[in-house]
Image (tube, rainbow, N blue to C red; front, side):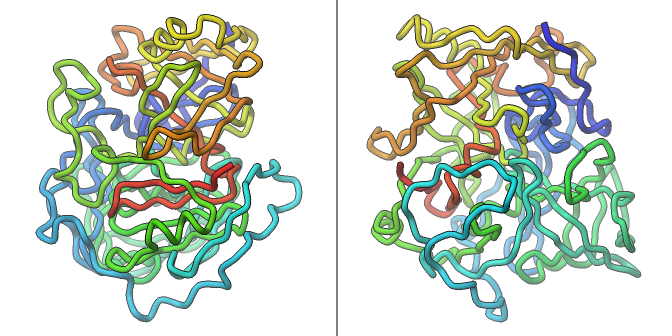
Length: 434
């Protein structure tokens, strides 16, 4: 048994990194970049509120906008325009030249991207930085009497957005007011002004990221319009919700579509019932990109968590017992035990959770499946970590509590291909075809 790893975020000692928890992800030293909520299967309480830990009240963080400057309705209520938000401000600067992505920075892990181009219909671009496998965007938050800029994690595994007011190296924004663990600010500059927003308060001092993390931008913002993470070019691009790239354009550019229908959408009314993944569950699944994954002939749903930094062991995938059992039944020799990689995770209730590691046997791969069940990408280097959530920690939520076969893809799954296009309008994620 490996060491017991403490949570990266002391603000909410949550175990499960499944869709936005503060888990120490499989692999030894990497963490889920401090996401304080567990939102792994429990429906949001309001737009941007983290999912409660399977019954624990949320911190109610991160209210996203419906349009440039207006906070959204309750997260359980689909917007009046059926989830189609307006395009970005007309004043947004034009994108850099589209085309073949730039080479990775020296010293980073090599990308295994296929041949693709980034078409201009992906929208304007702004720079991002990578700390390990996770992307960071420098955003500005304005308050009652001052503004502050800092690095926000772009976290598709978190349904809420967060801020650490003590984490700014320069002036910090002074909130308009704070209540119940959430603070309101007069403006948020992320591809232009979003107007008044609120974020959950958190403490990211334990996150060893470079640049230092001051906040998280979750799917309360990232599900409003399409965004593209251009890891190769160190950019994030914002697409229009009303005039985005066509399927044929993206296919011609070298991308394949992964279906997230029912799991990730700008229209929260389209999310599936929680009972789809947890027997007897109530509410809806979390609004997190969740795609089809096949290993050893067994299929499950895999949440994409860009805040799950698997730098220590890239290609990390967490799986639950249901998916592990399905793999063993379909192809008993598909997984090879790797006990030297075993670790224990801390949980929101202080109970440790052992995680067992497996490598893939020769000829096996973790396959991301497209709209028709075709293989879009296959990873023969994947390392799988089986979550066997103890009974006392099940209140923390996570894919370990799901009864349906499920997995969690770490940050490298979207970074190493070179680019990933998240389209909540049409409930798809596009990645370069191999």
